[in-house]
Length: 74
Image (cartoon, one colour):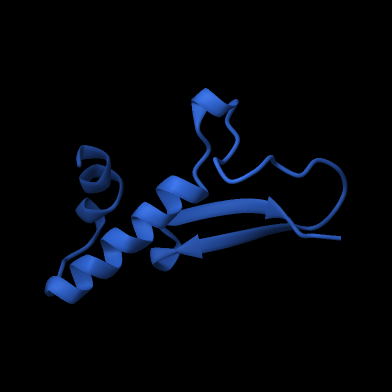
């Protein structure tokens, strides 16, 4: 809960339960699928990081508060 509060909710004024649900869902999706985990060698939990040449793409969530960079598929 503290990670959710510090890294997400402290940056927004929540306007109601639907808004809170949206913020929490976006953060949890980023946290569990895109965020690098130290226990996995700083790789995201959903597969290895692509190594090689290719365009790097940025995926933003919550207006750019959460960002995930990955290589575009060839």
